Image 1 (cartoon, protein in one colour):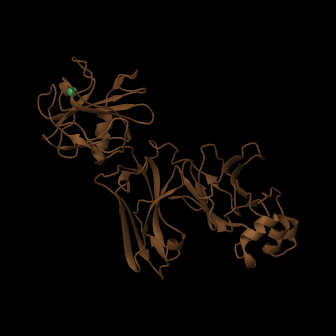
Image 2: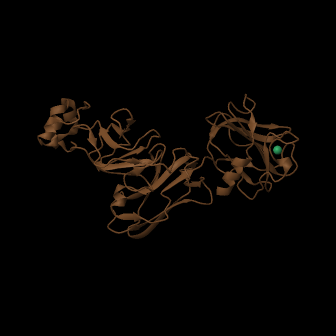
Length: 378
Ligand SMILES: [Zn+2]
């Protein structure tokens, strides 16, 4: 189907029915595809509102998920932050098929976006401009670490909570959804209760794997917001940190000088004591680089992340079931804490190495600050 770039269709101005407009602009093949009666022919796109989580209507911050509501938006191909000076500070966001739905377009606000009009283009009859401009405000910065929002880890003690009250008949398909701020994808969703109060608690897992790190939003989908309202205190926006706390039981965290990184013995890792046999899980997703026994390390496994960093887990009770070259996900069982190799007392000796990885040109660095951060949320 041809993409129309003109800003106003003369046919639309004359008020011809949308079906005829499509006939005028479409190749015959496209008409045949729309079927008899033209039931799939869209009308003119309209924009009604712009909103971002935790902001007054019309205000958004870089990195946030912005929802543009309206109608007939499914064929939109790009969204432009027009800014204040004509064309010079335009920031264009290309829309995937998933981002452009009939009644809503969802995009992550780019860091360069400026306050100003929002223009949607690529639709039939082409560009439409939102009735109100968007105001780009500081406050919720784009980077994950600086977001200041609630921080969670998958499988941690604190889930993301979303509670709501149903006020009218709940439509089939009304759901609470968890949306990634990075990709705009719905990663999980839950049907609404039929009446009264409902609540969702999300532990950060999608199937058996933790969700990717980054900002997430819990919200009612469009059908859901037609019949229910979110309650105050819901975690409408939060940050999922990467990783899974590896020691799945009571433990200490590098409790003495000897157990810390570096020091007089030039310790390449950190030591964390736990009861012998405590389950051990992968901190991070990656590919198994090594799974072996060595006199000092005992039973050990090295997992390399996609960015080339390596995580080495040592002194395990037995050889890990994971295969070299296979993928593991954060939270996947690697083995059990023990004292195999050269160790006095059952503990996890863990090493973090920069890219390109463990004894492949990287260098070890101190894992304790990261372990402490994860442990607080665990
Ligand atoms: Zn050690």
